Image 1: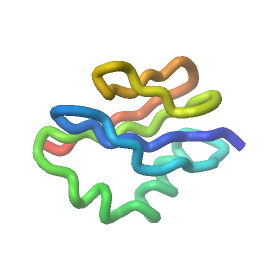
Image 2: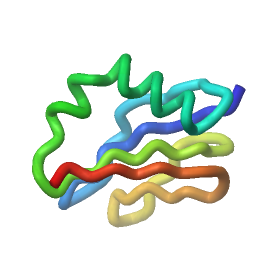
Image 3: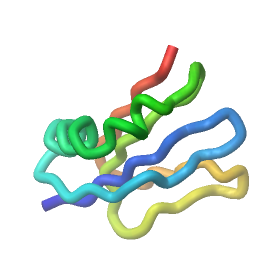
Length: 79
């Protein structure tokens, strides 16, 4: 199993939403869609949701933005 982190990207900062264990990015996306529907529906225009495969802990930079050091990543936006 791999570890995927879900982060909501807002205009001012990124916010950690959840950790998901899955075999693939596609499986993590399906788990997110089923388990975190309210998070997805609460997105405002311009927000983005990031699902990133990470090794270790979630790391944010000085501007509160997600730092992805390895693995696959998927991002989707609210238009």
